[in-house]
Image 1 (cartoon, one colour):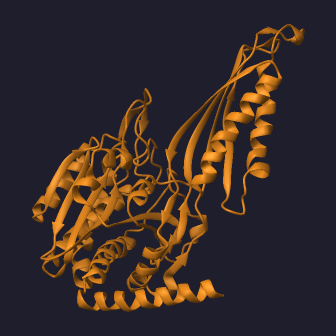
Image 2 (tube, rainbow, N blue to C red):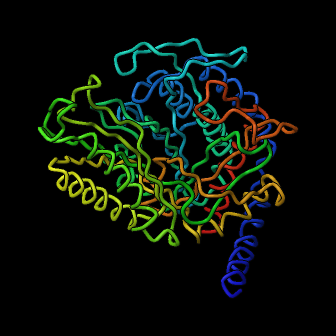
Length: 432
């Protein structure tokens, strides 16, 4: 009860500041004026998708637009990334707004008139390319927000940092990329944002709705590789060798017990899943080795490290008990995406002003991942979901992100543009 009352007070104080800021700088007209441009940009980007670290055309369009608004623009960050700085007329902190630019190796199946027919080489194969996760909409909405905010820069108490990021879906094999590389190349050290805001369109909510969650909202994602080395022998005489298949079966069982028996899941949930097990060539040969591949999803960074250690220990000792050896490799991916609770409470009234209090949805934790998490490790961050399924349609049955049938309602773009703009405006107004 005490915690609930305290949070209500925090949100109440935040609402007072946000409503005041919203009333001071009204961007409704600017958002309406730029809406047709946002739709046009998005259709063009959707028709011309580019894979991770290959977003050259997209970056060029973004940089040209930001320069036309009088911003200082830096390009070629983390391969194709673009950063634009809008300087307000009055002193104050810097707020970061981020959009991701890359498409996916997916062949589009929608029937929209701007359907992608592009192909590219991905992992040595020619594949279809599609904006199946809505990053085209993110770019277009942030370009729209840039135009809206440039129109009110004379009233801004601080600066806005626009980050157009490549490779959120992961860099190609052998390359670095994404948020982690942009940070490694020093964008935060150079521009020093105080907070970071991000937005993602999803089909799970209807147009007009915004989803949020304080604290952990999206999972970390990591990959584990296990090679179990045995000794090849004839299937009719297993005692003549060391069976890596039998050892691997025990390792699968043992690792599946890590979450259920070794991790305190009352703290945060976790998932370990095997996606690939490969070994042997025929029925009567016990092979030399078995390769296994899996994913780890988790919402607590301490649990994450414990899971890593437990996987290594479990695989190593189960293999050893069978006379085999296990080589374990953990490939760290994206950390947990955490919405700073204080920042979330402060900015929740801003989101309510944009779409209405009844359209703000507290969403459950999402076991998907986002490399916005790297920014939110450096500064307080807030990452929200924008509904993209048309009103009147059942969002629970809509094709999900990454589907070849993924569809984003154009009516949602004005709200996304306004939400990004208003988050920046209101935060700066609170700091003056």
